[in-house]
Image 1 (cartoon, one colour):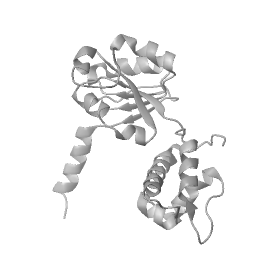
Image 2 (cartoon, one colour):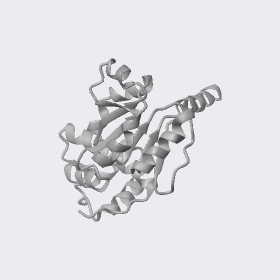
Image 3 (cartoon, helix red, strand yellow):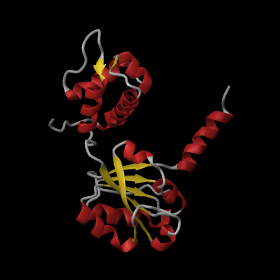
Amino acid sequence: MDKVEIPKKAIYRLSLYQRCLSKLHENGKETVSSSALAGAAGVKPAQLRKDLTYFGQFGTRGLGYSVTELRDAIREALGREQLQPVIMVGAGNLGVALLRYRGFEKEGFEVVAAFDAVPEAVVSRGISVPVYGQGEVTRFIRENDVRLAILCVPGGVAQEAANELVGAGVQGILNFSPTLLQVPDAVTVNNVDLALELENLSYFVSHGE
């Protein structure tokens, strides 16, 4: 299948569909209706059908979608037919917790290496992923054709670390640092600000009915 150009706003929804389909497959389901899949993903059926037009015609009227066929089509279109290599930069408490998370591979990603200013301290915490010094980042990215990185460094060094990642060829950064990164238009940054999310939750809790 040729890669299709998918609008950025649809990527997140497609990922949700793929995850729902994987769960259906694990439960032995062979087909699913558009309304059932849309409900599981939290979207309207019309939105689901519009998103799936990126892959051509899917589904049979009265029978629904083939779970395996649609799951594989979305996975391939999103570039997940093989595990995508990801690196972790900054392996403090949060970084180590993420390195121990086993859900990445299930979703098509493999953390292949971590980098930290004190790599021996990270290794001593029982991390199985290879851990290297900060100075090895550029070499590793270029030698292993890595395009995705998770950034968990302190805010004061986040932009410098991001500059190095971008310069080495990284095209997508999941940013856990409290800094809004400045990157070229061709690079995508998704920010995860845990304190901000808690602040938002606190507002809705305190202003609830």
